[in-house]
Image (cartoon, rainbow, N blue to C red; front, side):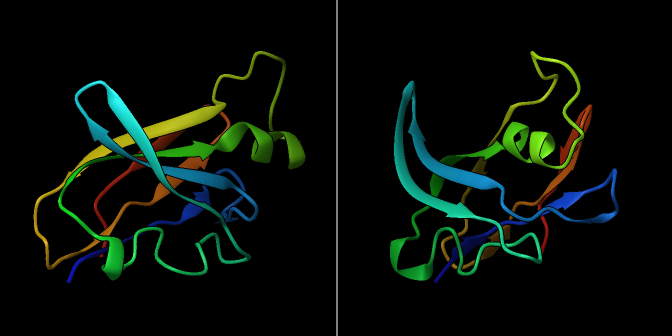
Length: 117
């Protein structure tokens, strides 16, 4: 059975990003339904999969990372309005037996993601 994990790395500081709030939504057309919420730990990861095996379904999802709160707390925010505040990543999961890992590599003025393992 498949599942979804995530983590956040602060590429400006070269370390995991602790304390970032993350929401997970299931997306269908223009409809979003929140299905999970988590906060990153000392390692920049959630303590458990953000979408565990027992709740996993294929489909389109969106992770929202509340990066602005973290950037403010770490003194990296700059002036308001922030360049990056909430970072959405929309992605699809088509293999019902796979482990999907969607990390966020974050700095105050840029981010990237990829399908990890």
